[in-house]
Length: 331
Ligand code: AVJ
Image (tube, rainbow, N blue to C red; front, top):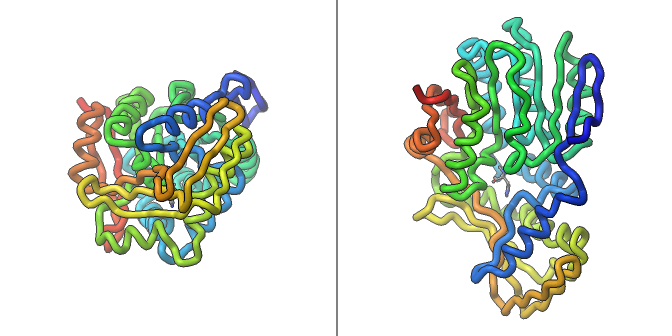
């Protein structure tokens, strides 16, 4: 661990180290030597990828972000009053605009003590900490720089009476079902008896609505998808030609998840210097870059149960596009 900052109000620590952090190299080596090639979606988010994702969130077709924000705005006070939360832990905190809605409600309830942003980007955590301590009187920020798939156990112990651990955006849908349940079990370990998980999940709906959200006419999502190839080129010295890959997005009605893929439009031979790997793509061969599961209330409840959690609150919009749910440790 590296302590990045330690003042009266702000403490920031990092669990990432450039030498040990072989996550991308390992994922590329494993993923591109599988019978069906795949790269996990967490590697989309370098600076450009994060910018492209912000543009996706502003697209008329991409409903999840604005819907989740509307639910949170409508229900934050109720959630805070019910949980009595003194602390907010946010996994994948980014610019913390969703956190602000909860922090406002906690401040209004007079319970606000601490915010714990957890993000892979050191800059993002620093900026959020700096802005928030200026905005909220007496707020302490304990920032954690890390990968919440690997460093979840580094979240500091609760400082107050009750905390909310939040994962917004439907990001939990990026995990395949088994991994998702194991992840939720690790989140459970962060919860004391009075603590709650607040989880955003996109809901099952008309496939046409879902597919439009992942294949916009402007091509922003296509660029976002191809960005993972730019990341691999830069970080691992590879020679992908991103333009040779076509963006594919479809809703798998059986599994109820969206899949994004990149389809080689012609045969491609790619060298990945950093791991000494040559990979061949046949014309038309596809690389899976993301699954994004869509949920029902029943599926969320079942996942919670399997992870030793219990569903305690369900908050949705009038069209039931998206849901926030609250969970506690099962008795
Ligand atoms: C950030 C994972 C919630 O799955 O909808 C947006 C990422 N992918 N468009 C999602 C994404 C394509 C997004 N999450």
